[in-house]
Amino acid sequence: MGYYAIFVFVYFTFVYDWKVIISRKSGHGKAAEVWNRVSRFLELHGISFSATFTEYKYHAIEIARDAVLAGCSKLVAVGGDGTMHEVLSGIMSQDSVPSTRVTLAMIPVGSGNDWPRLHKVPCDPLEAASLIVEGHSMLQDVVRIESVLDGRPMVRHMINIGGLGYDSYVCHLFNSSREKGKGGGLRYLKCLVKGFMKYRCKDFTIKVDGHEFFRGPALSVALGNGRYCGGGMMQTPDAVCDDGILDITVIRSFWKPKFVFKLKKLYDGGIYSVKEVVHTTACKSIEILAEPKSLLEVDGESCGSTPVRAVMIPSAINVISALDRMR
Figure (tube, rainbow, N blue to C red):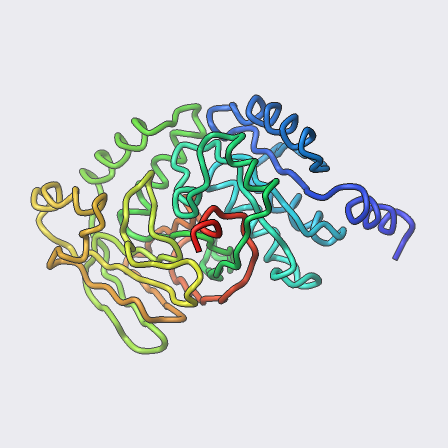
């Protein structure tokens, strides 16, 4: 190990408790202002940290991986679900440090905040930071996702929910508008409507634990390690993030006007009462093909397309969670 590497290792191990990764784009650029408040709060409570702002897409993956390899075992994502996804993927992309030795926290700044909703992490930044100070943590499952991007294999890791079909098409529309400086809950609703009008169902072939589970046209396929997506919708309402099981919900192709009348079921947890919905809650791996190919979104981020393979990694990482208070 060179002198610089030794210095970096010592720097992270003995000087700072936490590595903080702040997304410049989250919350329409509000992350910096939020971080100013949170940093003072953490300093006041004796929490030491090193902070880095992201400069480009996927930068959080690089920062997180380098921090873990340098000896840092506690990381904070300041941003939205996408930032959390990138930080997790950075942690899981290295093999030198077991992910079970790493603790991951989030200060919510995004528009959806579905992972914090699952873990009862307050949207108020200082209340969220208080969980870090108090040290409430639990082991959570992680899902390894293999897909294809531009003809090459792509690997990401999922902390909450992924989707194909209509879900991923809406995600693509929303992310494209966000890159143009547009975003927010209303914008997501507009993308839902636009996507609903334009999307055409694809033919999916889905295997669960090696056995064929579904074959035919489908509007949506959701893979759930958590239960919330799209700012509070519940496509996998029975999913539990630490049970070692991956949930899947398939919504068959059906008459669009009828889907509009059933939309409420996505928000009240009653989606399984819709007869066009097929689901299973007991699997460790899923393989998905689509014709024509389907885009894939993972934790609200576009992540290539089919073919897709998802594999559960039980009790993979420690997360700061308010659920720990309730157990």
